[in-house]
Image (cartoon, rainbow, N blue to C red):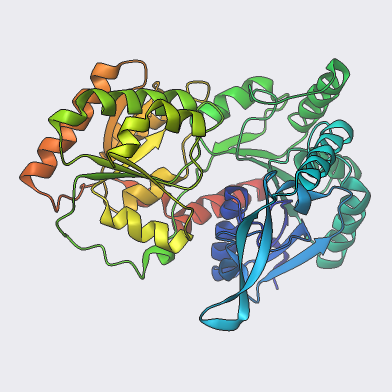
Length: 442
């Protein structure tokens, strides 16, 4: 085996972790493996926490997963504060398990769980990978020496995994360290520290990480600009975005069918998305009598205070909140809806929701409520929907009416996207390979 086709990936979040943080490198690992690369992934031992876990993507003979210990109680952290995960048998396969959320009604259990979360935030004040180096660095050194690996990719968050990769570079100067940032680190306005000393230390960790790499990869141009200003390095800084995997849509019939005038939203409502959500609902409230066919379906948790504020819309079935369903079912619900709702927080104009790629490949028009930035550029450049400013209710009204007119003329309408094939994970992996090849010339 050509050693240049061996890669070590440091990914604290990796299948069966079911959050979006695991998806990016589940997909890249899948396509690297298909292209003949041997991928050694170092991660932690994850329980089956429910939801889409991407395990099918990483079952490949070229993907070797090394699950090493972690001092952090990560499986407890990622179980909901108000719930626990209960295993039940899959109705179609007695050998499989799926996981459902069950409410913890015992107040004592809730309080103990909150205390454990607080203790985690106090001692692991940066993130859950803060003390992982005790296991991570010795194991990395062993694998790198044994397999003669040159290229090491660390993906964050958690960003202390990236920091420990930079420290690994100090000990093994002959390797290439590629820092893969999916999110902002210290520029995240929702980052919380119990003490100023903790924040100061975290800034030092970030500074070290951004001064010791061979290549830095970000998911958007805006995030690249932020990190480039901090990076004390003249090495490569490149954008390789998130994307979509066509295999995830192979069982969905994307036909031109007549649809009701219904929107779907299956994203989160926190981290600044409360503001565009309120703007959208205010718009719906103001125009709903003019569009009797209008309906908006929300899947998953919905904030009670928002539900109370717009109770009339819920009582009149203009807004409907459904329980969380499987990833596959959500894809079908997207396909059945006329339009998809996307919310972008004002504080993150440089980030793009991973859902936008799935909406585009489904040929459903997207209504994005945002405040300008990268998402607006993407929607307009690729003709995948309408962008409306969250600070302008009139603009949101206009966008909904525009979609309404399209629907009245053609209830089976499909968007004609332009250039979205660049976000196919197969092609994005080729970009990563090109980056790795460029490092050989250094």
